[in-house]
Image 1: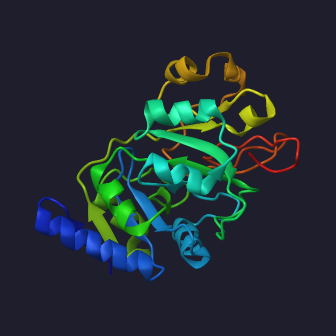
Image 2 (image 1 turned 180 degrees about the vertical axis):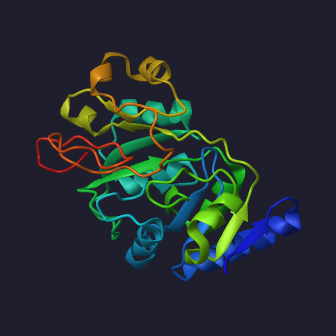
Image 3 (image 1 turned 90 degrees about the horizontal axis):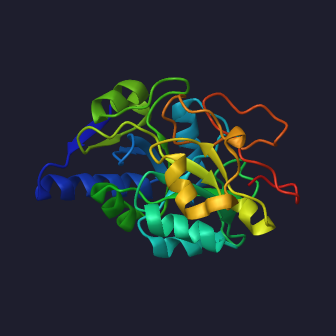
Length: 257
């Protein structure tokens, strides 16, 4: 049976982070608060741990999780060929409810699922989340709920949804409840406009302030209103988006973006 760890004072926080760090190092999954919704997290560099995350949610490798990092410096360690406008998005909105799809660094030894060479990165605007990320390194994180169910906004909701699949639940109080906005920035490196693949907490108008005419038209944007899901499905432009999850467009090279 999982345990909920309070984080209300420094001693509780220390014990909670220690328990989470130990679980992550052992290849287990944990639940953590973020600035959007509660997330189920695993070591991004452990294929077995990422598979445990997907199994706990009832998802397949076709819906790989985004990766949360502690700071801007980590971005270049995980992504390559980052367009200057993508950097400006991070500078303007991170930490915060922005997830950006980038080209994953080819030298990395990880397996997040069927990413086709991309990675969706986010810096959460949560002190607790970032402190944990400093201890563990990058974490694969998806919303703490079963596939098709609403995302959890409290540790108790996450425990009710995921049960024995998770041993450590960090309680940071109620989460914001609105998912991050996801921008696919990989087309920028091909001279094409970036695309909002999920409209979330950040409005299109705010994204457009940075990207200007380098943002694809509204009719290329995934409709809002689906469950608050921190997972991005990867599919070709001709394919239907996976349930609850926006798709990433396919670059000319044949890899997902």
